[in-house]
Length: 91
Image (cartoon, rainbow, N blue to C red; front, side):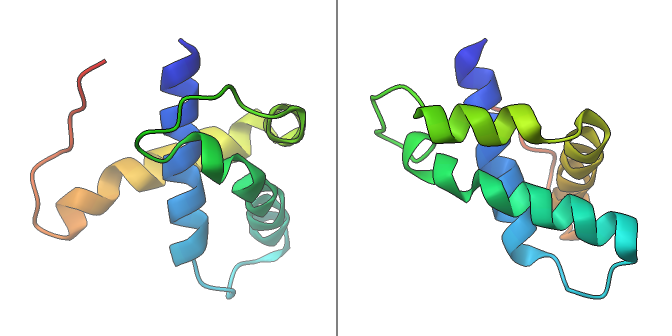
């Protein structure tokens, strides 16, 4: 379960890096909140063996669930928009 959350955080961090700054205010607030997850990057790269830091856990805890879920839904559509098959990852 923790590894799935970490994988999701990694996707979110990638999506935040790709998003433009032309969002409306509520989306900008979501983008700003998601950018706080950058502290989680060291824990989601391949080969990372340590547990997330308290900063990472705190950043994840402070994210609005609607914001996070919306971002994950957007991220799940990126492969199709790039004419790629859906990504599936083994556990």
